[in-house]
Length: 307
Image (spheres, rainbow, N blue to C red):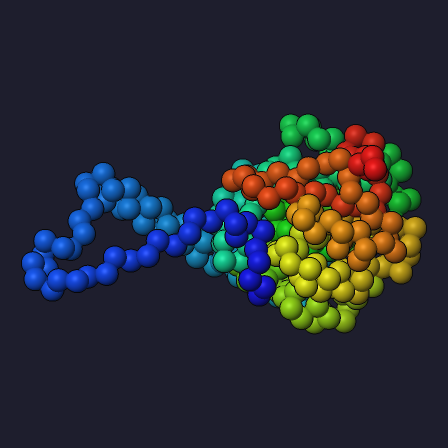
């Protein structure tokens, strides 16, 4: 992985360890934590243990579900008949809380509004997703006549989670079956979404994607994990391989730092990508100036930034 992360400048510098100069009075020199600090540490450790235990259960549940699904498909059953139905209340994947951010992987989860905004652009015109978080998505009146939408989501698991757990389940079954999202992500934890919706991806190997995924997607949403020009360009290679050849249908969205805007505009020039007025936001904040670049505008979602 590249060494320049989205938020590397925001991390506090490592504090040097004090050098011991006297070997006497060892007990006096051993640092001791206050009772308050010890209590906080114990709470943190218990919280981490609880998260790990919950994720282990989630993996077991997912493995059992995929085994059942695979068996049913082998027996020529309809996938929709065997995949368990879930509501937002009983599906552990309906919340990103089950996944902790890993700064080593430059992971910073979007807010719900940001994920919803990106989803709204991706699903148009098949589905109208208003930006009101409490509103229900509505299918196009003539959705039967509209083509399916295949959506590739690169290094943006928040968008995939929101789309598959917070939007698609609210749609009528025939409309659900017309939306085909796939997450391309380095973090193997997201394999719990299933083999049909997860591809392990490393931007350092931009052409290493399954052959049946090439030229398949109408929409590609990408958040390159690092702000280096190398990461941006390599990710763009993957985008080019994934996008469908049908130019009138394909859409591209890139969320990344303002500091690499020139690289983005040059690299995606052939797709008509421009900077939009929309500003992606992250749940835990991000001091780097973030921008959303897209190949098109959409009323009620975003407009291009005036140059």
